Amino acid sequence: MADSDIQARQSYLDRIGRVRAADDLAHSSRSLAAIAARAGYTSQSSFTRALTAAHGMAPATFRQAGMHASLQQAIREDNAMAFNADIRRLQARPAVGLLHKGAFTEIGETFERLFSLLGAYGLMQHVRGPFGRYRDGPDGVPLEDLRLHACAFTDVPVTPPAPLEAFMAGGGTYAVQTYTGPYAGIKPAYDWLFGVWLPGSGREPRDDHVLEINLNTPIDTAPADLLTEICLPLED
Picture 1: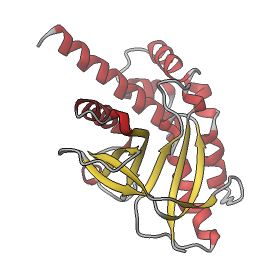
Picture 2: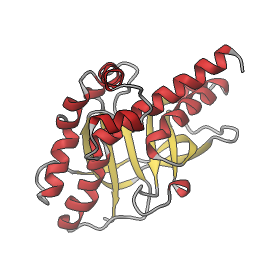
Picture 3: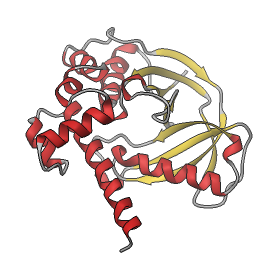
Picture 4: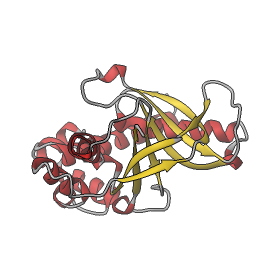
């Protein structure tokens, strides 16, 4: 294996380790030492350095701070008023996507491949912003059966070659919750919106894709300042 291939593989493993660690910090009660070992770090100090560099805060601070912690408290208290879910009509917009199979937390690699293909096919000039498109939720579905799309809105309809897919995204009424923070901590936002807000809202979900719209990206935004709109389709 060439040195460049070894470096690329190690970079990928390091990234997956950071994502897994951040996911554990936000959603589990595992100790920091156990999280570090599970993510492949040889010491807790190396784990602390890596997470601090990636998220701008130490692991313990990441676990206790941020919107995911407030959402978890709202879920425990069954508090549907803790956050806002705006009711909006979203215009249908042209988009292109790439199928991702497996864990939500690993969709970053599929987004990278999506934009690489868009560039190779000369379509980047039409891209107007990334988003995710989900039909299955992560709970109750075997990991290997999860299907979602890494997507980008486009300014005009495009006809890309496979494996890219073109479609219209949005159209209709949605409950929109804006989540602030790293993508690894976003799951409690879904749990609150679907499990707390929706049952008490008097609204019925519509059988359509959930959209996860990125209002900014990690390219130019600190993880703590990332803004994501979770758009839950509703019946009128």
